[in-house]
Image 1 (cartoon, rainbow, N blue to C red):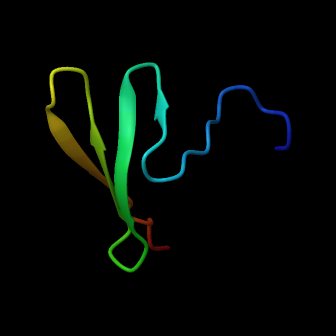
Image 2 (cartoon, rainbow, N blue to C red):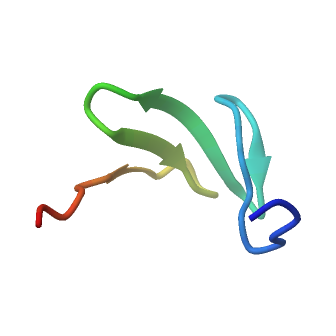
Length: 50
């Protein structure tokens, strides 16, 4: 919903609360972030099938 303060949209290179978005792979449905201390992690989106 527009104006929902719980959602943040980041572009690669932007940061929020010490987490930086490094890259996004739309085809794979994943995004790689880096946290303070240089540790990186990748989140993957898996849609539920009905």
